[in-house]
Image (cartoon, rainbow, N blue to C red; front, side, top):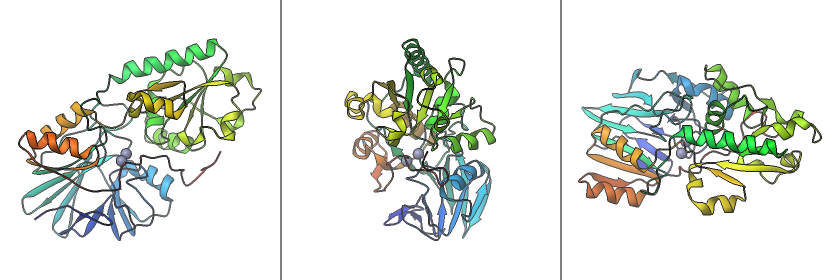
Length: 339
Ligand SMILES: [Zn+2]
Ligand SMILES: [Zn+2]
């Protein structure tokens, strides 16, 4: 029996009668992480990791019906043993392990394999069937070590300071922004955060993750000389807005795995692109799949056809799952959505 099937409302577990990261409202949901394409409003019941709780409440509302588990803690629901295991993607992110009558399935949600200091590192889980994402499932996607990317960001920030320009760094508000803040050098100058980023910084700090001091960008006047020394973290949606005009002439950059493609930076119209992703690259995906020992692999969002073909050539039973994941996270948070 298949422990997870693709239904119009989301990935569904028939024996357990619940959905994993449903894209339409359902009665019982199991949430891998707080990004907008995985955690949506309107579900009757939410089950997630305790590390996700702060994020889910900040984004979906304080009053959601939320039950939490620690990593590795097992609950039994209609005979299905369910547990969460670190996915290394963002704070609280998890793979979901399901066990029923001796069959083990793992749904990965989104994951990356390089530990980043802002969330519990990815842990492979042995299973018969592995449900994997493939956001960057093409052989061209190979990430450089993140330390090199942070060095580039620091260098760009210093060079802008020397020219008297503010440095505006666009990134997704949840996960990537905090990873950037954790990784860059706060000694260089003041750091300002957009109102969509700051509530999430707070959740990370409360979880004990080192995030340097950030100032609320809205508190600064356009004439303030601080701005020309500052690095400003903002979501992509702030680009071209009146909000951004207060920084006057500035240099801007975008941090994303998609920056690997030259055309993306041009389309975004930014001065610099930093290749930094919270998803596994091609070697990372293949390594993770191999570590599970799974003979059967279901591929969700991303370059599904390419990864399925590759895995079949390796002798695995691979197929695609149609989902509505992949529009990663640029949704406003429940509080302070505008700033
Ligand atoms: Zn995600
Ligand atoms: Zn996703």
